[in-house]
Length: 322
Image (cartoon, rainbow, N blue to C red; front, side, top):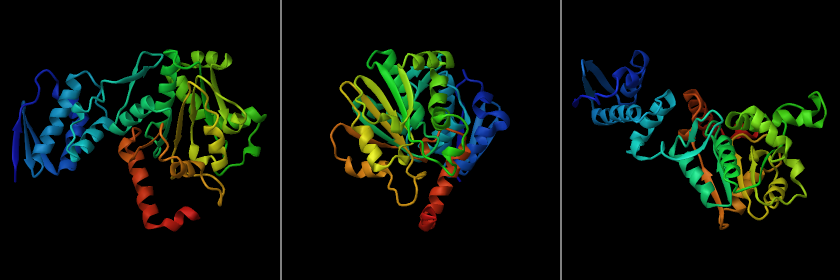
């Protein structure tokens, strides 16, 4: 059995790295199949992957020393990268700021997949962000749209979503048409309020600098100098997808986000997102960015749920047709 002794960075309090009741060390022990023993300032690691465990611990100390917040998601991601031989502290994830929230909090890509997504948006006029729940597809798109508006690169932001029923009937909801479709647009409002603040977002919406609309409202429009986002695009039909993409005018940028494992269209209706992935894959100026379960930045259980569904679907492909 291999053994490694190490003395971590003295400028960082060990309990900040180890976590409450040494929860982070226990996670490393499980991930690397090692035993970690604390002896004063010294850390003793025993096991076949003691070197990797030591590298992870050093990474955690470096993260804290650089002023970053060490949460459960970040610890989990650092361990996941280490399994691929990648150093988190060398990815420069903490350096590039997408924008600042109304509270002054910097928004940054948290995973390599998210970083590639941000870079794709900067380099291309149309970007498809495709991946499971919790990967930040919509939030990052809204953040980049807001930053483009602040930089005066665009004059307005258009946020659209298909008003597709996910097991519920739209007609059963109370209120007029706008009140009926607002629940479908709520995730977009939430992202706006979180980044801009509710009052600022509502002011921009009143001036129509920001529009949050159902996808059907896009027909017949040509949008110049706009940042346009289509969210939940897996629920757009192929006709709607073509209609949406051809709304793009001069000086505009388009982001299409979706999760092809959560299609709510009626049986027999093909998803416009899947259709676009096949039709537009070789078109210059259009980028497809695939996010995976390793890019999930919500509660760690979300990643395990995503993996469980993917595994079950592979074993039971007929389940998706029910």
